[in-house]
Image (cartoon, rainbow, N blue to C red; front, side, top):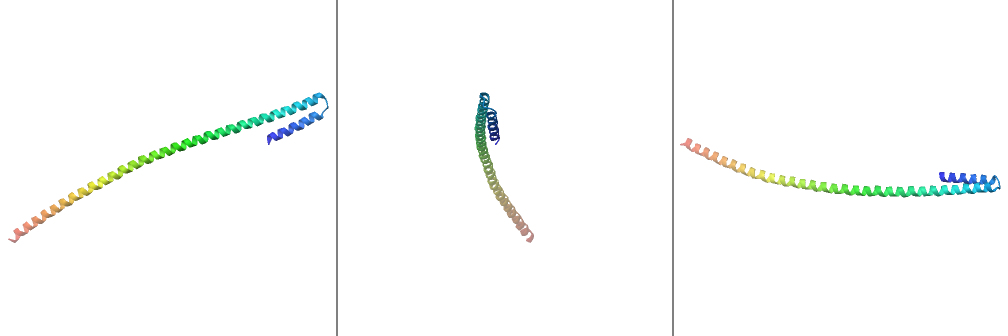
Length: 133
């Protein structure tokens, strides 16, 4: 929008300069003004192109960085998942071993309790026989 305003102003100035007289100086001034406006327009266009190219490069760099960051995050998450799974497997194995050990201890205690009960019953029977005699 601003470029159009500047160009319009330059055209008006060129017309004024050209209309101020028919002298060679007036015509030369009008021509120089037009050339200056054209040069300014080319410079503005070149600057705009450089800005566009720079913006595209910046977008490419940001996208590339985001992609690399995403890949690193994904790799980190996968590595963490492997460690967590390994830990969970160890916990599960430990729980199974503890359960088996607990069952074995329970069987031993149960066997000892049965043996104790048999011994107590035998002692009672022995005492009952002595008392009945």
